[in-house]
Structure formats: structure tokens, C-alpha cells
Image (cartoon, rainbow, N blue to C red; front, top):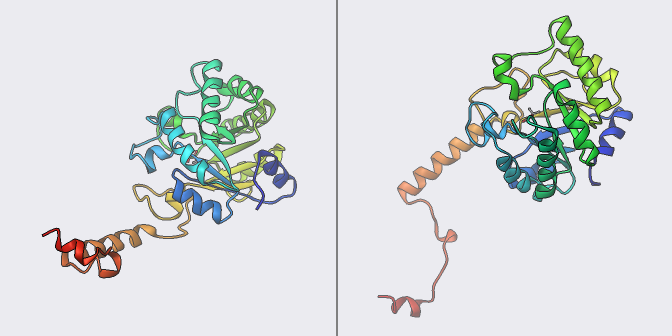
Length: 276
Ligand code: KIV
């Protein structure tokens, strides 16, 4: 399989081929997703919830992102690795945003960064793109704005909000983004946005009119049950399998059924005698 690049994303949109993306935060999971042929691995700051147990993504640091993205990148032979810029790593100044995007690329080997927002981040995106770092935009329900939104709510339902999102998407394209995540917006609005721009849209809770889809891997495999959004489809229920397997392991250790002879190593009898 050939390596996916930002160019492949644009080619897929032009060819009307859907783009597949999933989040990944660790080496062994990323290796499985890459083997399955997913186009892109997103080291999302959702790792704050799925990996670190926070209530939202706001506490995630640049160091957290770099640590996880390095592991994912080691596993990716085919998929393009995109790493989220965490809250406050691109908000303070253009200089800070470029420095932090540069650290992600240099230290992790990711091929692109993703950051949230519309007009407020235009200058940061332009500067990061000018530094030759591909940027994926992210609009709609942007989880780093959870406090400003007053919760995780569907965005773009009013005429004003919907028009703003269309403007934001065009602005992100003009600022140089190679792709845009549309999160939790009405399906028909996402379709209008996708048809209004030349770069691909990657939807999560934004319906089938997007140019690609992304899901949080723990959600689609049934491994994170704190909260399951409406837009998630259960492709597996690993929770149940993991809990069942661990129960059997505990029972077998307690009863002595595990380990068996085949799980152990031998020592020469003559040496053994000398140990008593
Ligand atoms: O952090 C994340 O997982 C994301 C996806 C929800 C798009 O940004």
C-alpha cells in the first residue's frame, strides 16, 4: 500500500473517493488500524478523555500529544499521521503557534497538525502553513470551546451559525488548510460546506455528505462507555470481551489453573539440586 499524504486527500476528493480516518493514541492499536488500511490516524486530544481519564480535552498538554504521537507514528507504515494541537498551544500568539506546530512535526514525525476554530485562528494557520506544515482545520463542535459553548452541543442549527460555518470553511481553505473536520453539525449543512470548497471535509457527527469520516477508536470499538454520542456506530463491543477475559484470568490465577506447564521455563535438574 502506498503512503497517504496530503496530496492523496485532495486526489480522493477530486475522484469522489471517501477518506477514512480514526483516532489512535498508542503503538499497538495504531499498528492494527494501519494494517486494516485506514487512510489516516488522528492523534486527537480526545486522548485526554479516552487515555488519561479527564472530563474534557482542556487539560491535555503539548508534551502529552508529543508522547502519544511518537508511539502512533512508529506504527504507521501507510496511514498519514495527523496530530492535534492541544488547548492553549496556538492561542497566545502566531509565534507560539508556529513553534508548537514545529515541535510536533520535528519530535513526532507526524505529517500534519490539526487545530480548532475559525476566524480567530486564521493568522496562526497562515503562519503554520507558511512554515511548510500542513494544517487540518476543525469547525462545528470544537471540544476545546466546551466552556464557551456551555456543553457539548450540536452547532450550526440557526441561520446565522450555519452561514458563519460556511464562511469559516471558505476562510480555512483560503488560509491554506488541506482538509477540515466538521464536528456535530446538521447533515445538510455539512453537505453544503463540502460542496462549497475544494479541500476535503472529514465528518464526525456531520452525516454522509462529507468527503470522509473520522471516529474515536474507543467509541467505535466499544471500549469507552462513559458517554457514547448519537453519531457513533458500534462496530465491536470490546468492553464485554475484555471484562470477560479478565474475569476468567483472575479465576484461573486464584484456582491455580493458570499458568500451565506449557507457559513455564525449565531448568536443568542438576542445577536445581544445588539450589536446595
Ligand atoms: O480529538 C479528537 O479525537 C478529534 C476528533 C473528534 C475529530 O478532534
